[in-house]
Length: 276
Image (cartoon, rainbow, N blue to C red; front, side, top):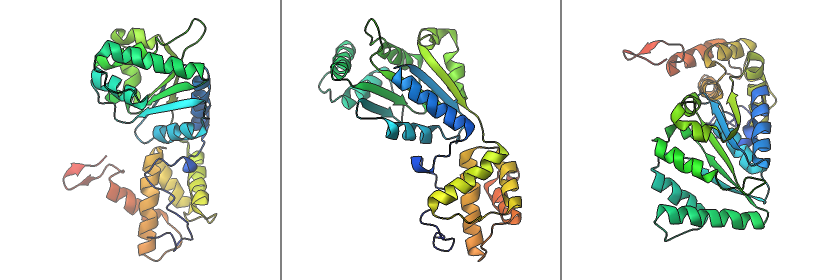
């Protein structure tokens, strides 16, 4: 709607996890490097971060970076029973018409070993892993880490989720899986300077080097976004829309304050309830 008005080729602050918009802050760059290293070493990896911190976008960038020698199996809805989880994995390996859990595990192992003989490493990425419903499903995940030869693992496993995932795996009941984890990393919020660079980066990718936000507007975004990329995107996108409606070329702090109020990111009550 406002792209042409601001000289943009596409919307710079979309909610979709498009890897080409990924901004490599210090913490995102470190996370990406660790994910790549963990995949190369066929490790079990845990990546955590607050809601909207960029975890899924990072996983998409990782998938795009992997060469043909990797088989990527991604699960974006992990609310699965143990049987459902194994069937999803089996389906991605094109295994059909097997219903017994033991037979499924054996068939999956045969596929994993077949990949190994061809120089292919399966990479299983489970997003929103904090939503896995019970310990039994985590036990099936642990069993996948048993796919090993004497000298190496046969697959890489990445669990991505909110901080509760790490707290959950720290419980004694999850110790057998926790002991298999080789890498853990938590995505921190962007600093104020990184927020400024983040906004400029996304505007450049979208097609403009013009500073569409005043310095005061960016300071206001820093104040209310708490360094979370999704919050930044919501505020910036709505600010662009409001500026377009007002026929303004530069987004001011007043516009950002209005947007923050409408989104409830300043803790005000809207319609009798807190939107904080």
